[in-house]
Structures are given as C-alpha cells and as structure tokens.
Length: 339
Image 1 (cartoon, one colour):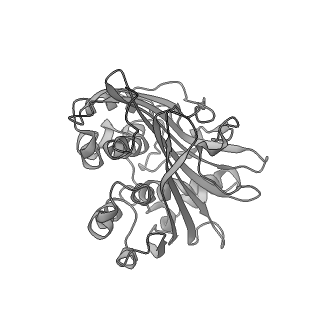
Image 2 (cartoon, helix red, strand yellow):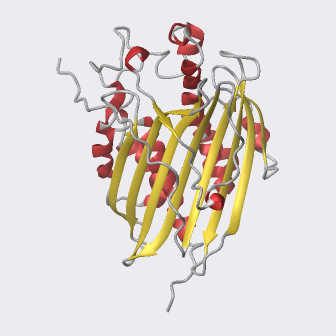
Image 3 (cartoon, one colour):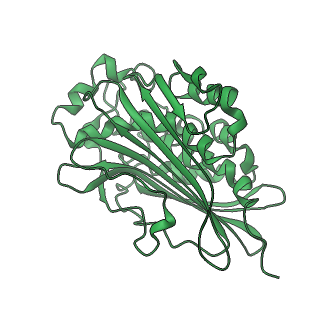
C-alpha cells in the first residue's frame, strides 16, 4: 500500500484581518464553545454573525446581524436552541445531530433564512461542534485517552473510524492509528494572535474575551468587492481557543482568494492557502480545491460536498468553500462603482 503524500506542517497564521477596502462588504461569523459541566458533558455554543458595508467614502454600515445559542449533547445533538430571528420553527431543530443531518434540517426548517449571516453561522454548527472539543488537549494531560473512549469517539466518522473521510485521514496516513481512529500524538497546533486588526477595530463584530478555561472559537471572514471587471473574494477561517499560558492556540486556519463572474456566478479562479493544519497529509486538500473552478458559487453548499468528496477534500476547507455560496448575495449589497 502506498502512503499518501505528506507535506511540512502548516504552522503560520495570516495574522489579523486586513483593513477593509472602500466599496466592499465583509461578513464575519464566530461560534464560541464553553463547557460549564466539564469535558465530555453537554456544552453551550454561542454563534454571532454580521454583514458590514464599507462605502467608497469610508466608514462602516451594518447591513445585517444574527445570533444563536445552542446547547449540544456530547454526541453533538441539539438539546436546546434559541436564535435572534425568533423563527417560529426553530424548535424543530431540537434533537437533530450535527453533520449532514443538521445541514439537511437547517435547509428544510430554516431555509427561508438562506443568504443571511444567521443562516451562515447556523450552517457552521456542524463543523464547529466536530472540532470544538480539541481545545481540551491544551488543558488536560489525558485528553488523548479520554477521546478514545467509545462515548466520545463515536461523534465523528464511522463510530470513530476516520479512514478516507478526508485528505488528512487518507488510508495509510500518519494521522491514523491502526484501528482507523485518529492518532493525536503527532498532531500539530500553532500559537496565534487576535483576529481583529488594531487599526480597524470595527472590522470584526464584538466577540467575548476567552481566557482562564477551555473554550473554543470557530471564526470566519469573507470580504467581497468589485475590481478588474469581476468579483474579488478574500476569505479566512480559523479554529482556535485559549491555552493555560494565557495566549491562543489554533488547530486550523485557511485563507482563500477567489474571482467570480458576477453575471453568471461562475468561479473563475481559486487559491486556497493552508496556513495551520494538524497533520502532514492535510495541506494536500488545497491543491484539489481547484476542481471547483467553473462551477456556480451560488450552488457551493452542495456542489462542494459533491465534488470534493472523501479524500479529495478537507472537512474544514470544504466549509470555507461552501460559505462562498453567499458571495452573490453579498455582491448585491455592494455600492455602485464610481462613474
């Protein structure tokens, strides 16, 4: 059996968000996880999202925002949910488990919110809940052993068997133990700084301070503007949390640049940069992401899952790309170009 291709560990953050461009729209989302009853118990996830217009004359105009609060079981089932839209059907999400089931339920139950920042951050519940528990590896010495318990192991893959579910877990890879579960012993992580740019404090929505205990944050940014006759996209993503040393550690970070034909919605070009990833096989997914070029970005929530399936994709890069489905919606909020 041939081992999958490996790469040097991706261990360099992009740093804070760039300054907002005049004539652009920025969407930022975050999901903060906290465990009031300790590791392995139900936990609380708080989602926040905002769309911000930067006119050509400068300044900032909030276009839309949204929030949610979800209590989730150790098996990532929604036990309770409250959303800022006060949607009459939100309660129907209770009992749904994160993953494909939650995405399907979200489309069926709250599909009328599609295109809004609230829908985006709700869609991210699936991926954020999958990763959040990793932050405990920074705080407990026996995290690896506890993750191997059946109760926690069964929340991902096929009852904890992760072989070939993504590029990073390709069969024969360094990321996998003999039984197909994740081998955390060779997992990499990187210290990171704040996401907000000190020269542009309103460039991110307000996020609570995380310190002193295990907490996790999934954060996402999408900038859209017009230039050179196309839509330009600069998207960023990070999974991180505080560590006992008083700083922050990240396990995932990507930066994606894209160009989109505004009239047709077709993806013209794509560059995916793997900045921080946990295993040596993971960066390989960035090369395969170019298979999305030529497809309609408005259909990316499903098209990415259909195209970058299994070892062709990375679960977290796929989520970055799926979020580009709202680029046409964000583009409609752009100010008209100067005459």
